[in-house]
Amino acid sequence: MSNKATIELDGKKYEFPVVVGTENEVAIEIKSLRADTGGLITLDPGYKNTGSCKSAITFLNGEEGILRYRGYSIEELADKASFLEVAYLLIFGELPTQEQLDKLYKDIKKESHVDEEMKKILDGFPKSAHPMGVLSSLTSALIAFNPSAVNVESDEEMYNAIIKLLAKFPVLVAWTLRKKNGQPLDYGDSSLDYVDNILKMMFKSPHEEHYDIDPVVSSALNKLLILHADHEQNCSTSTVRIVGSSHAGLFASISAGISALWGPLHGGANQAVIEMLENIKEDGGDTKKYMGKAKDKEDPFRLMGFGHRVYKNFDPRAKIIKKSADQVLDQLGVEDPVLDIAKGLEKEALEDSYFVDRKLYPNVDFYSGIIYRALGIPTEMFTVMFALGRLPGWIAQWREMRLEKEPIGRPRQVYTGENLRDFKDISKR
Ligand code: CMC
View: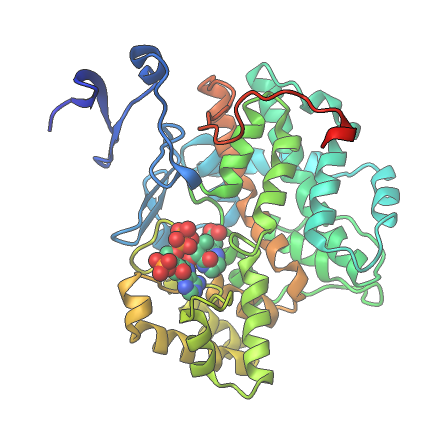
C-alpha cells in the first residue's frame, strides 16, 4: 500500500502520510491539512471516520467482533483474570506479577478512606436523585479533598492520583447505593479482595454481623467489570481524554466521563434495556409489536441494547454475557421472565432483514442488566456498575494521553450561521 494519500482540490494536489497500526489499521494523517491547504478542514459529525489519537491500550475490530486489551483477548481475560489484574494491565501495559499486584492492592487499601465531609455532600441529595448524577458529583467533589491529585507532573504524582481514585471510587459507588437504600454508609474490609470488598461495601446490611460472599455473585461481577473495563475511543472515554487534555486533572476528567456514560445511547442503555423488557412484559409480552415499533421510522422507539457504532458483527462481550446470564440465573436459582423476552427479541431480530441489513446485533448492555438484577442490584444502579468497570479504562486512556503529551482537544467547525449584520435597536426589531 502507498504510504501517501493525495487530496486534489481546484487542480492542486496535497499529499498526506498514511499511518498503519500494529493490526494494519490504516489512517490518513491530516495534521498539516490546514497549514498545507490554506485553511481546509475535514467534516465528520459524530467522528464516525476520525481517529482522535494513536493508542496502545485496546484493539477492537467491529467487522470481525474482536476485542483485546493490550493484546489479550476479552474471552480469555473474562475467563481467567481478576478485575484488579485487568485494571493493572490496562493502566500499566502488562499483566502484573503477584508481587506487583500485591503492591497495587496494598497501595489502594492505604487510600481507601473517603473524607467524612463527603458524607454531608451525599446527604444533600434527595433519595430520588439518579445515582449517576450523584456519582459524577461525588467524584468531582473528591478534588476538593485531594487537591494534590489535580496537577500531576511527575510519575509519582500520577501514580498517587490513580491509586486514590481506584481506592475511593468503589466506596463512592457503594455509598451511592446505600444512600438509595437508606442504609448507613460503610467502609471496606481490607481482608477481602478488590471485588469482594466492593460487594460487601454495597450489600452488607446493618443488621448482619457477617456478610458472606457468594462465589457465584463474586465471579459474575468480576466478569462483568472486566467486560466493561475498556472500549477504546467511545463517547465517555473520548470525553475523559478531551477534558484531561486541558490538564483539568484526573478526577474532573473521570467525573465528566461518568456524565457522558449516563446517556441511554451509551452506558445508560443497560437501564433502558431492562425498562424496555419490563414494559414489553407488562404490555402482554408481544415482542413482534415492539419489533415493528423499532423498525418504524415515524416511531422514536429503538430496540435498546441493539446496534453499535463499531460492531457490525456480534459484540463479543454480548456473547460472553448471554452465556453468563443463563449460568448465573441458574446457579442463583433466579427465574426472570424478561430473560425469555430478551431471547425472543434477539431471535426475531437476527431473522429480520431490517436488523440484518443494518448489522444490528445485541450489544454488551442487552443481557448485562438481567445479571445485575439477579445479583440484587437496583435498575438505576446499572450504569453506575458500568462506570465502576470502565474506571481502569478511563484511567489508562487519561494516563496515555498525558504521557504522550497530547495537545488540548479542540475540533473545528463549518460555520453555517448569519454573515455580519448590523445591530438593530430593540424598538426596531
Ligand atoms: N433499534 C432500531 N434501529 C436502530 C437501532 C436500534 N437499537 N440502532 C440503530 N438503528 C438503525 C438506525 O435507525 C439507522 O437506520 P437507517 O439507516 O434506516 O437510518 C441505522 O440502524 C444506523 O443507526 P445509527 O443511529 O446511524 O448508528 P450509530 O452508529 O450512530 O448508533 C447506537 C449506534 C449504539 C447509538 C445505536 O445503535 C443505538 O441507539 N442503539 C440503542 C442504544 C444502545 O443499546 N446503546 C448501547 C451501545 S453499547 C454500550 C456502549 O458501549 O455504549
